[in-house]
Image (cartoon, rainbow, N blue to C red):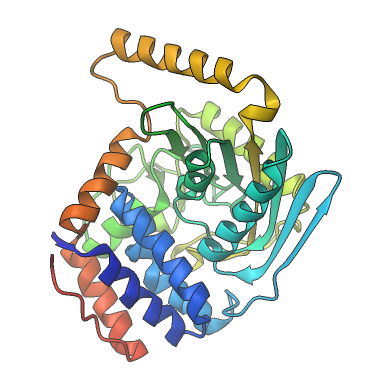
Length: 344
């Protein structure tokens, strides 16, 4: 593990995305989102995804120069990403929602035809930095099932919400509906390491500690049926209500399908100043957060650890595992953009 300057990582990463056909401004935007995920402690959704994303850009699974479309109907923002890289189109969709939220209490944002979004809580940071409450969930291809299932049954769809806390770092809660993210299993498979038996099932429906077999099987849901229920809620909001196309009956999850499939997402921006009295909102929020901290002094407010890690990453450099550096070096060499970032 070594630390690398965030700006240098983002510059190099943008150059690789450009080499894959992404316009310079979009490449820079997508790179900053990915590096921010690493800086906040989400290594499964930053540089570790580069190989998959570049592969999808090259094979047409992700559109390098998407013809995005934005419209507002009945107070809902609809943003068609045209199959573009999720980190780019979701950032732009959130920006469209924030613009409308200046004058409205609630702004639903429907993001259609987008690639994998990565660490979805990152997209809510502009909302809380502007003083708004944000929510996001994304429909995902089937990668999760209960034990005994013969194949994945539903997506391990993520959800996140974020709320500004007066005088403090914002509350940012980000979770997938599986026991752990599939990215962690993918990393274990690449490194040849075992995984806990509670993480996944193999292709025969049996819990497994073999990461490679897990990638060919399905993830296990968080808290059993409760995790499945949350995944169903997200399919309702981020899939069905978003007008996502029906799932292909022949779809089969496996190692080769990681990161595949354009997806849809649902976002919600709430402006407390137009929803209720802002001072009352701040007072109540500050009071219950203080009570929580006093009653549970060993517990962190979600998002505070990530905010502290991001500040440390900006000072000392972003931590990147040696295995990931070795992987992205290969991606850079293949793209004609050698990894030229020196440790901090």
